[in-house]
Length: 488
Image (cartoon, rainbow, N blue to C red; front, top):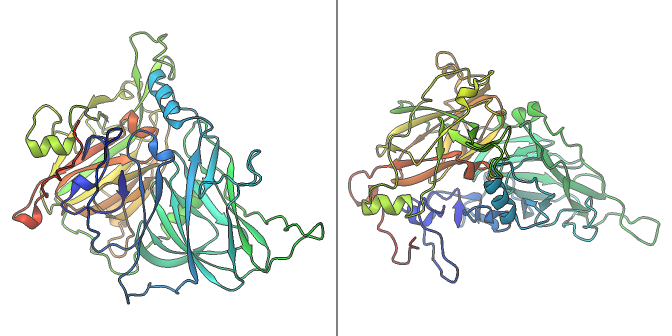
């Protein structure tokens, strides 16, 4: 179980991803996560971090300001958590097992949900639509969380403007929009004022799809209902809700325009002198099979799907967790030779030779000195398909200093970096066929997972981990593990 976005300073034992900072909690056993939240406030969330269990095991984690400390925006009349989810009409664990057995892509979901309900556009759900009553004129804070497994989403409320005030538990310069784009793992706080004619208005979400692959094209809805909304003349029934205009499924221009407006409300403490400059290619791949006709090779042309960072397809250990092996000095679990740049340079977003489509499976970590200043450029590739990969870094927040389309140019693109007021996040999308750059200071010792938050891609290997070394003294050193830490 993970508290997504909580920094867990010096305490990776409370982070939660299986086989990274702990072994799984076995059936009938328990483990108590003990942690301290420091200098964080806003909307985060918690979820299972084992296979596809987070399809149904998740919830909001809201950190309020200290007493007497107001929000840096208009005080809302009330707050509503909005959890966007994804639903399969079968056990999602069975969906994953079948995909991992066959090597093919998993079946797409059957519905999206808002606070656990799909809405009344689905055949089976006429009485299963979330309704949020509001008084005319009041302002509400919506704490929106994308807890869907595999899909970035567009979200909007009919006829109402959304004022964005925070992302990933970090405040932003407020700006107004008709729609937001939110990736799996991300949170967005918006203010909405009930300033329209009293009526019933749909809030809705549907896919933002960037890959050349099948996707769930359904729409989930909930209802924003003015308490003074009139009823229809027919038997006092409520009027049919008004529907919002959502962007097209592949509207990258709208998604890009939204993320480009995000700014910190103050001058950010961006690291200026960089100690580690990393270029990470992120994308899919294919593993050739010795017998393409095998039932375990049902990917494209008798292959198995894979994914990688810098051509390394991450393999999670099974004998011990990475953190426990590191703390105990146990050899043979991982190596620390993860490549800082792609092993082979190529036209990342062009027509890539099939010889570069096969990643190497390994458990490689990248070692960082305590307090080193790190820059990572995530570069999407066109291997199999270009796609927006939402990258999440455990144990840290980072500044998003730049992004663009095509191949990152180290000679010209850094001149366009925003080093004044970039947004601070814990999860950031890599534009389809493009790149995004982040910076952070490695001030949290331990082993911290970096991975794509599309849960189809994680078991395929789109992950790596940083080993941040201890500094000097107790306050710069990983805490000892708790006595009830699960064992493998």
